[in-house]
Amino acid sequence: MMRGHQSPELVVAEDSNTARNLLLLLAKQRGVRAAGAADGESAMKLIGHETKAVLLDLRMPGWDGFKSLEYMALNHPKIPTIILSAADQAAEAVRALKLGAVDYLTKPFDPEELFAVVFKAFDLYRMREENENLRDAVGESANTEDMVAVSPGMVALMSKARKIAPLDSSVLLTGNSGVGKGMLARMIHSLSGRSSRPFVTVSCPALPRELLESELFGHEKGAFTGAVKRRIGKIESAAGGTLFLDEIGDLPIDLQPKILNVLQDRQFQRVGGEKTIQADVRLIAATNIDFAAKIKEGSFREDLFYRLSVIPLEVPSLCDRRDEIGPLAEKILGNISQRRNCPQIRLSPEVFELFQKYDWPGNVRELENVLERCSAFCEEGEITLADLPPEFNQATSKGSSSSAGYLAGMPLEEVIRAAIEQTLELCQGNRAETARRLGISEKSVYNKLKAYANT
Ligand SMILES: Nc1ncnc2c1ncn2[C@@H]1O[C@H](COP(=O)(O)OP(=O)(O)OP(=O)(O)O)[C@@H](O)[C@H]1O
Image (cartoon, rainbow, N blue to C red; front, side, top):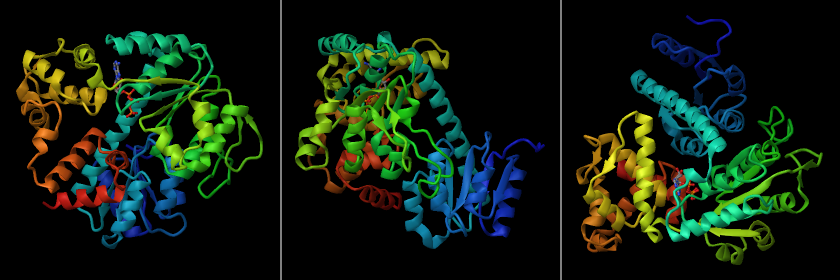
């Protein structure tokens, strides 16, 4: 039964009274506590502690879907938003997805399909919450023992990291995607004098420019449309601790002087604010790109690069430390087994050998994903060749650790499709990251996927 003080699990923003009332009725029939409003702004006010998803019409009087999405990204980033769009609004729906909506449904919708999407969004919300709790827990406990380091390169890196951890200088971590830069940053923080204060991460490509600026520096009430209350940015919330700027190469050029100011003068201003605020953070930045090219083309300031890289540390790719694949796999499988409360899952000798030969372009993250997936299917606690994903077998069965051998003779379109689909999987469905890694536009990724969906 709905109690007065409980906030809705589902908020519906839809200007058509008939459609809104129908949605609320359908929700009630499924035991979902829902509330609705006819415009975005009123709907946003209904969001409470128990809200796990928002259904958002795109065209509404007052705050439309886009304005509401921006508000959600700023104020309720964990709550998934599902777009309700008319059949002729496909382009707008895509824009909404880019602004962070998780899915979109075209009207008229099938109630079963609609609620399947809503329940998936509830699951996603729970997952985001769990991840956040997990991250907080890991943040507290990250220490040298969590990080596997047995290869000479990693042992040397860890020893350097331990030495520089207590200093307050900024650190630039370089290395390919998934090598462990984020983990190393946490470790440096946990070994520093700032360890009892927050470790705060900001991923530069994850947000559009305006949202990123507000995420970093915060904003004053009324600074821009949607800024309905003052917001404290990540630099401020990391006070006394460490700010980890992931993928710093994607920091927009016009935000770079503001970060330079934080590094040089240890101060900044909130967006729309006049007060100068002291920035008490240690900066650790990470990148997987070649800065020389970015500086040359003028998209990254050289002075900022030098300020950031007072201490440069390079994390080697997994294929350059193959002796670490075994210990890493064991550690990851240990974590999985512990989480599932089952005996330690092992690799069969054949899989172990194959793992040593494989190139691991997605590095430790790919190893984690493969193990996570295989251990869900494996029987009797051992991962065998049959449990491996097909593309993994394909890539290695030709006796070559590089994929070039099996690509030869394949129709180009299939190669492109495989590259897009596998990169998307590697990036856990993140289209923007997929586009970035493949060096194509996000629109091209979207168009290709749309075309593949019809074949
Ligand atoms: N040496 C290691 N020991 C144990 N786990 C590791 C190690 N290196 C990486 N991992 C794990 O691999 C995953 C990827 O690591 P992380 O996110 O730190 O990589 P990254 O280099 O920051 O990636 P990206 O550039 O894509 O952000 C994480 O789940 C991390 O816990």
